[in-house]
Image (cartoon, rainbow, N blue to C red; front, side, top):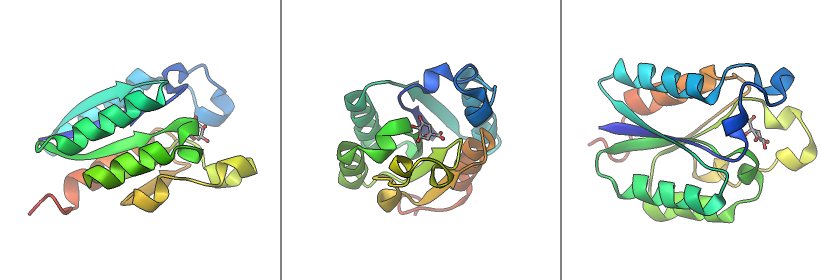
Length: 149
Ligand code: DQA
């Protein structure tokens, strides 16, 4: 069984992208952290990053259709604040979702205060830096969801 870890636009630049906001860890560090945390629970991770909204929709649909997938950890970057398509993909598939943000969008510009994902997320982690991904994986691994029975 596996957890899908999805990162959206500009998160491939982690490490050099506004490090005062997002820190100096890289996307590879994030994925390694997730893999380690999942492995502690006997789970695998499948990691994907895309700058394209449709590819993230595809990834959510694939995760939702995969009976081996426990749930998804998604940092949708700026699409968080704009994407009805990502919202719909989660709803359509019934996928368990944990929404992650490195920063706390609520403490930032007003255009980051709305999330189209929070209404379809089981849990939201924001402002914990890369540790947030670990908390998200931990949650999916240890909390039985609708698919666990
Ligand atoms: C982010 C917050 C978003 O507002 C922003 O567009 C990002 C990263 C975060 O991880 O803090 O790209 O999702």
